[in-house]
Amino acid sequence: MKQEGALASADFEGVGSIMEAQWSRVLDRLKAEFDEGVYNSWFKPLALVNVEEGCAVMAAPTNFMRNWLESNYADRIRRAWKQENPEVTDISIIVLSAFKASEAASTDTSGLLDNDEREERETGGPATPAARPSVPTRASRAAVVQEPGNDYGAPLDRRFTFDSFVVGKSNELAYAAARRVAENTAVNFNPLFLHGGVGLGKTHLMHAIAWTHKEMFPDRRVVYLSAEQFMYQFISSIRFKDTMAFKQKFRSVDLLMIDDLQFIANKDSTQEEFFHTFNALIDHHRQVVISADRSPTDLEGIEERIRSRLGWGLVADIHPTDYELRLGILQQKANSVPEVEIQTEVLEFLAKRITSNVRELEGALNRMVAHATLIGRPITLEMTQEVLQDLLRANDRRVTIDEIQRRVADYFNIRLSDLLSSRRARQVARPRQIAMYLSKQMTSKSLPEIGRQFGGRDHTTVMHAVKRIEELRRTDSVLEEDLLHLERIFST
Ligand code: ADP
Ligand code: MG
Image (spheres, rainbow, N blue to C red):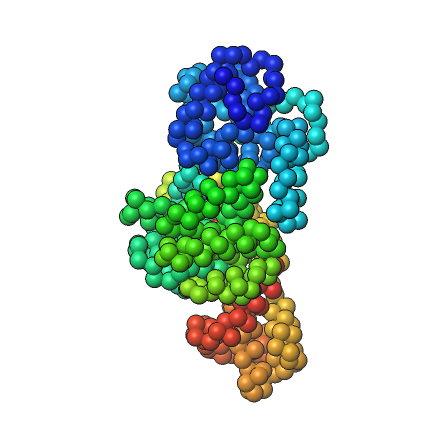
């Protein structure tokens, strides 16, 4: 039996009729397992290339389809193969660009796509009609074993739960809001919009919402995916003339989470589709959670009507971490590897020195743990300094008090000399406090050191400034915007 997929005409040597029969039964299994839209979008275009050494090699027409299949459906495909042929223990998906070029020519949807999206579709190499897929060796086969989130969402990371999330001042609002969404079916605020810099826990919180919500309400349809994946699915639905199915599936979920929304900036038709989906869900009182690296008002390249609607629910920002939170996170991670002994002073040192984001902090700890496991000795401070030399230097380079003072003075349009002076006029006193606050947050300098650099002030003055700004940023939204702006300047 010939499969109907577009690659069916490709006549690969070595694919015997037994294999072909098995392949068509594998497809039947997948067809039965998934709804039609998913099947048509993702499995139907696949072609069997070969089965050798227990590995079934299939070809997809584009890179993005291959990647999507690998990260979402590899397990299901492998299972279906195993059920048909127990000798198949592994699968591999390659890209066959020759097919892609001819297929793209016959399905012209380019009018519907804007430039970026079109570009996306056109990567994949030149047409080489006679090309035969080169079957990868065992070593080059990517082992993709991921837990699929659901039929069309992205995989969820088991480690990203509320339990493993350490709460501090900088993320408590986001955490509380995420919990509220996860533990309720009634919609409290819609959408929940989480924003903050890279590596500060946005994705972690969204996965935690998904895990908790699914556990508490098994019947609810929860879908998590990145804005990028949303776009790929949308493009694919246009390509396979399947937009109705696309619309239906996204409009039938109870809780939709889209991560890294900034990705669809300037991608007009994807934005349009996102906006329709978003409105439909909100109108039907389904919960929507969005994340981005900046606030709705700052999302450049996203239409004004979308930005304003994104701000209708609860906007919760995740601030850069402070020392206590960093230490808390390190302690929690260190406790999860009880077999390795890490001195407290090492954790304190890391929390103080690695201030960029949590991902780097975790990376540093992991490196130390790996090192300790290898050499079989407890982790000491000297060892840490040596092993992490490069990382520490990179973090050191980040921000100096000097730079903070100059930037803050620039931003508020005052003279640097005024910022450092003892003038108490509000238009210089507030920026000064802000600069002190940022110096405390973004450098590892002590309060007395900071005081010295601000024209020889006492450390209690610095402490007062830090407290004052901390309080104010919770209530004064203009000040909060200023701080976010400045923090962003320094984190790039
Ligand atoms: P983002 O999506 O904001 O870029 P992630 O959610 O991917 O950041 O977080 C980066 C890494 O840091 C992840 O491994 C995550 O588990 C960890 N992380 C971030 N914030 C916390 C926290 N408050 N407690 C524990 N781990 C955290
Ligand atoms: Mg993320």
